[in-house]
Image 1 (cartoon, helix red, strand yellow):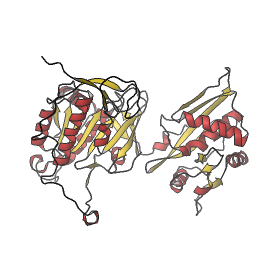
Image 2 (cartoon, one colour; image 1 turned 60 degrees about the horizontal axis):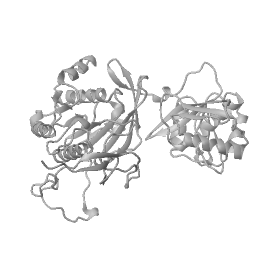
Image 3 (cartoon, helix red, strand yellow; image 1 turned 120 degrees about the vertical axis):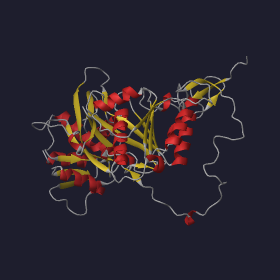
Length: 471
């Protein structure tokens, strides 16, 4: 019996090498090379990757093409639709990942139940067999009885939602072609395997092949397809990065499993805004959208406390108010600690250096801890000014003015750089009752905002001086 040939495949980019290497030669990632059995080459005739169109593609003039607006399918969950860009698109492929137990299957089961209920409502159209209005949930990790038990626990209404417990790709595709569903969910892509390959389910080759075949089916049939993906210990989607490239939308579930709040963030969306954020609360009857997410990220203090500053951040098209807390304490070790939760730790070290150089605020003998309330992760540089104010407030043990909200990026030269959509941020803060804002000079509104005093600043020392005048 001939010995199977093996190669080492990178789980990030899919690159292959003959022998193991600590670093991938293509994407430069470390410890991502995994030994994989090479599959025999597929025959050239009847290739399963033939062109989607029946005829050969031809050159076309871009200005002569007529674009068409794809209709959206609302899922009945407003926060989920917001992250998707308004709803599901016909033929679109969505990849959603998150930690185990975060609520991926619960959210999708709720969305499918709503879609199935809309299709079965009076006046929804013809039968599913003719119009392709059915909804199919393919579960590779749970049996039909387990899914039914979850639906009963969530108290979902009785709908014609169709269930399939299967992990074989060929049987799944055969069932989907016969059912012609409007929306289909594959939970999860790591459990599905193809008979054309000999490797185990979840391997690089299987994940890549199954995702490609399912994406091809979605584009041909117009079915909106949602793939559930596992994540690694680092929180990224398991499998090769090509999985993120071939789909249309990539969503990540965030949040602490010990908290009742969940966040869905869009990292890629061909049909909507990137970095859009959806906020949910986990209840006994599943996930419920939060209409005012700023209330989650603002702590309710009986009185003003030192080390707390309200940041006006922007997540996609939505401005959010998040409380940034800092604790500065005398260090008992020769190497003071610098720790941040929900914020970038490298920017924290940079801000401390800028404060020392341009504002004379010394923290080299202090432990500095920074936290974003509510478990949200803030990556935009407009949070710099709020972090700086929170650190200064904790260092001096003086609370900031009540009703103060800030935003702005701090540069290494001590300048305060503007942030995008400054007008929308200020209007959101004024709507929530904040009456004072310190913002970059370039973000100063041309027209006064009712009920809010805006203080524009251009440099770090100027911002701290404005902070002292408000005390």
